[in-house]
Length: 507
Image 1: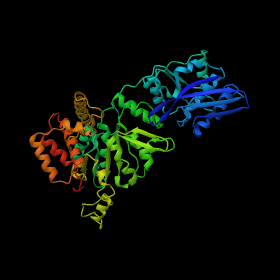
Image 2 (image 1 turned 135 degrees about the vertical axis):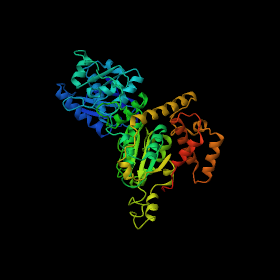
Image 3 (image 1 turned 90 degrees about the vertical axis):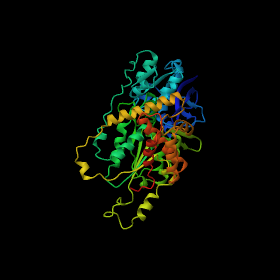
Image 4 (image 1 turned 180 degrees about the vertical axis):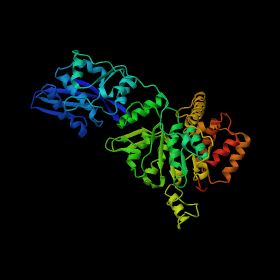
């Protein structure tokens, strides 16, 4: 008799249905798993044997063969333990195999039969939902399964309780988890904390409104990291679609927060010693890296020139395509990477270039060498490049009113709502934010009046700006117009966008 259970294999964020077949036949006692299993799946044999012993079931002293089809797809991860065990139990007539026909099972087995938390449950539950199947998972993964929208969630704390449920001797309690209501997040920091830096705060607000990439250049202690950390506090909460997609990434990475669903924009801040693989993702299981963990949020790279050159150059593709592809010999794994990149750097190695009292004796050569660590193509992908000067002492103690994050967040949300409404009227496909829209759509929404067009052409002729740079300026100008509630881009909007294109890094 051949018994079948269903589970999934993860190719990036894409779950693929896998059929787990078990057959018990006469012959010398053996246990064989075929279908391109990795070492983790191969070790499932010992966990399953131990589990059967602990729950009082004798493991068949016959020839047990487990096949995972399609056989040409690599199988990796401990979530295959439960479906393999269920298929064997079905072959032993210990459970009704018909129950497994319309269910996808994922779960790792402890030696005592417990089902601990596993990553990727929400992705498996979404596939089960698409196929109108139920999802069998550990009790610790109940929240993820429910948030996927699947109504047939069977969450068990152990395989004993699951077997009893499938045999009808006792029923598992229905899931009690509910999708949490979005509430105003408490980040513990606020844009109100930043004194002075009016231009920099305005640039951060414009960047947030249009999802633009920002590079801040300035001496140590001028507040670059402080501004970047608070940029997250002015971003609106994720939409339901964005929250589900972001949650899938964190589930696959095994990094879901305690509350489970990720509905606040992620903020990733890798150290400058981060490797190429940690940035783009990869490893034996092709796990998502920082570029994907920051999806729908902010990736902050402090001391940008200190990062490995390969890690910096890896930003080229994601910043243009909003995705990152990890190539392997037998497969290509693609993760979404729709990020807002915020980077910060000193004007030179010592950080004091431009200050005649503090700069080192190697100036300006040290500044040129330091800046040259960032290639032109990467620099050209920043929509906004600003110089952040040190705050004056008088500004630290003045009583000038400062704007709170919630006020700025409301303005950002208003600008994004205008962009969303415009995209819906024009049937825009993909991202609707000005910093990420396609070139054709950009041309359609950035029609300049005669005065603004003449001013922009004159400015471009007198500056060394590439074609991509011109498009970046138009994107920022469109966002500035959206923040002001204007349907037309005026000369004032273009002028402000031009001042955020400080590619020479000079004050």
